[in-house]
Image 1: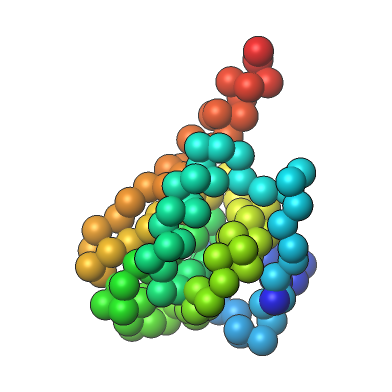
Image 2 (image 1 turned 45 degrees about the vertical axis):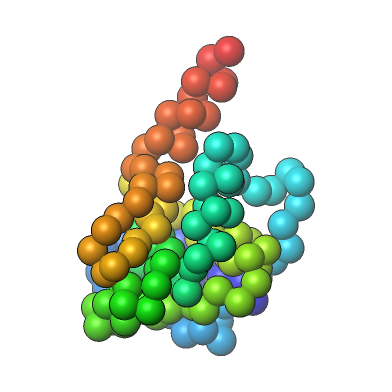
Length: 136
């Protein structure tokens, strides 16, 4: 199951409008060594997925990993479409696909107890890390 990239093409005009997707539209691609999150971010995401119940994407830049049922239910109350985490590799593939189509404000947070946010990839940190790598 992966995301149709055209549906998630962040248009600046509609980026902040409410966005919903159907689980049937999600088809994961397979991770390759060349196409995955870079470390240390991959390690943080991988560790969070050990406890994850579900994942979600707002269609623009907010990507969340729900770490418990209470958090999952909270996202549902806010009308997020939740994708159950059944296989870690598929979840990483889908998170990466969402990441690649997100706008420049992108981030990934793991959330527990419906109100505790853990910045796995804080806003602009991933790209800052890339800039530092490019300069060396």
